[in-house]
Amino acid sequence: YNVLMSIEKDAILFTNGDNDTYPIWLLQRVQGIRTAVTVMNFHLITKYPDYLKKLLQERQLELDWSTLPPVKEEGFLFALCKALAPSVPVYVALTIEPAHIKPLADHLFVVGLAYQYSPRRFDNLSVLQKNWEQSFRLDYLTHDWYEAWRPETERIVPSLNGNYLAPLVLLIEHTKAKEEIEKSNRLRALAFELARKAGSGAELQRILGAR
Image (cartoon, rainbow, N blue to C red; front, side, top):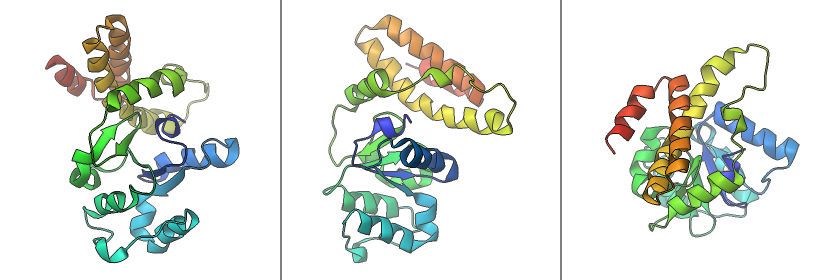
């Protein structure tokens, strides 16, 4: 839900694989949430070229394929975002593998649980704070609504929730700079709780301790 709330209503969103794609598809198709967003599973793109072409046709988007590198090269996602951006808002989920993100890192800006692709810098921190405070649902981060033990709860959920750490670090510093100290402290406490569950508490301490 919060991934969809991070992006514009008619955007293209690149996701990584099954774990971050199926929940979004479920929300769109069953709950009718942000149905105008086109979700592009990057794993499927690299495996089945016709999958990407079909999605682009559905959005009536045309590409000059001769300008794109081979789909399995690290620079492919960058070239694809660059080609699409003039026509439609483009976002990349925080779950995309770092190797694919690295070539376009200078053009990605955290606005929630997704990066917004932009050839120019903009005030993404204000967008991030607005999304966090006005659009996100955060209760499930601190409350387990399922009584029965499930393997995915112990393995997958803490790992996926670890994706909140990047926006949280930015928000902690942003609110601190605005002298919203109480808010910054609450965000900090949440960040350390999520990091503890994801097994990255020491790394978070190193990052925040150096600031």
